[in-house]
Length: 191
Length: 191
Image (cartoon, rainbow over all chains, first blue to last red):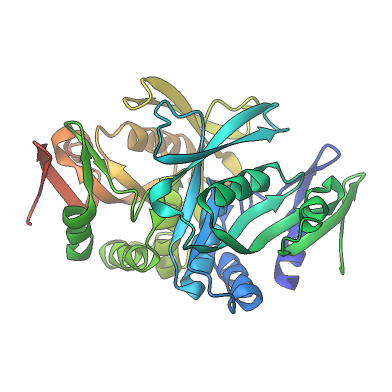
């Protein structure tokens, strides 16, 4: 998606060797018209799959998922993060390892909102090593829900998570794919 | 706002003496058409105030703020929660006490995205004791930003935060106000 690629190249900030900060339009300040276009693009990619729910993970996925959900006319469910004190029988739970935090955290979805009747689209802001996405897939699997597609805003292809999950047969579509970050320079696929 | 009041009365779940769960349409599963109407209502209430940014707090405020921002045609900034390892000079920081967690947490906003030039609308999902809102107001004050209004989805009036902050001259508009929760029964203002 050219609009997103342009924003990444013009405004994205590289921190260290592999961190891309896009908090000027996606992760902290949110550019609504841009996210609206991203939502429209996800609908173009996945709109024919009879999706009845969009699933994302707090916090940065929520805005993108909501803007996309307007086009799909379906509800959004966001997995909650954190070591909740009251994990009960009524929740699907998975553990996600975070390289940023150097720690694992739990994600949870209430059993009320995800079941074997659901055909879901998973949406998230970043796909890097794929740990967060694997956690969501684990929860979808526990629920028996059918994953009809996975829409990612920015994939960091050099961290390998996307390829590893595609080999399992998942249809992952990323609006912008970063091939490499070297010496502060971002190289996108199909630039 | 009648639509929201009806949803609270029909679907809201009371837990214990004072907790209202609305995770079937607001806090976990998100009903997009409802939030769109809420965004439209916030625009009706605050649309004439030359607001240039909407400020909220992760996670549950993000969806409402984004749906409102479509009507205001302004960006959303969400304050980040948590004890970040890299608090630097580039962040406004405030501390919020949470009765739910029985602990304080930090909220932060990058100095890049809030300044004395900004006229902001603060949007959040709940107003109870007002601690989270006071944290955002503290950050707005640090930035020198002008708070043009505060839009709340659900105010729990019996916890007193709204009245305390209104006495300071703040214009707080809540789409649904809960007068009391007793024996599992929710009583709304102007029902």
